[in-house]
Image (cartoon, rainbow, N blue to C red; front, side, top):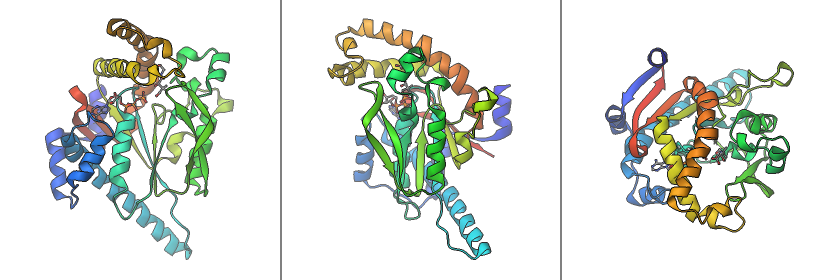
Length: 314
Ligand SMILES: Nc1ncnc2c1ncn2[C@@H]1O[C@H](COP(=O)(O)OP(=O)(O)OP(=O)(O)O)[C@@H](O)[C@H]1O
Ligand SMILES: CC(C)(CO)[C@@H](O)C(=O)NCCC(=O)O
């Protein structure tokens, strides 16, 4: 059933086919630019950038261009000269699938085009309720679930950006304190493109009580991407990252998880498997994966984070 839905809705490209599409694009990256991209994640393979992300950035450039042209046509029709509102791209997918890495690569590639040089990136992590509120509401074990986000704040934010407001503030999340930062915000000032990344960006809230239903994030999104992978890979990537955090973020004395810093590999793997099985895994199956076929584009990863299949909405 699942596959027939995808067949009905999407054009499907194997990695090889997709990567060939870059041949027709007049865009090359210098070795230096490739190294810069690599600097953001030392495990990122450069083939991945050229085979998958370069064709994708060209496709997005064309799609954004079509929207900009439509804006010019409307201006001509109305004999006015209003400026374009920011183009919104959303990136959804499981915890640890690599949403923020994908978002950062696309930001770097998209801002190289003269038609849209200003590309901002916001993650919905900042819209999680502050830690004290989550504790008070008994939601500490539900982080990432729909009820753990201040959806009104998120929808108000994206609506203000889309309305072209000159300066919009986004809250910032710290993976060290496991909490919203109380003393700083991200400032969004009329970018050409805003990339909004988070596991909840395709959710509709239709299961909320009718009296608190409000517009969805997707009402403001122009193009949506879902990064997909089998759950066994996702759990493994989550556990690998947990091991890295033990040496990095957890070793900071301010870290919420500082008590994890001294764990052995085996103890750390037991704890991260348990967090996956009780929080992130159930959230994936209940609330994230069911939104996948709402996306305009699905990027399906296999082993080692390499993209196997690209699905593009017909
Ligand atoms: N293209 C890639 N190549 C190699 N490793 C990657 C790639 N993308 C992500 N990773 C690794 O996978 C892990 C998860 O990546 P990332 O933090 O981007 O995921 P995320 O989906 O944003 O996670 P979260 O929802 O928890 O914030 C990290 O350890 C990252 O280094
Ligand atoms: C911040 C989120 C919800 C999403 O990125 C996630 O990384 C998270 O913290 N989930 C809760 C369970 C865990 O610690 O992985």
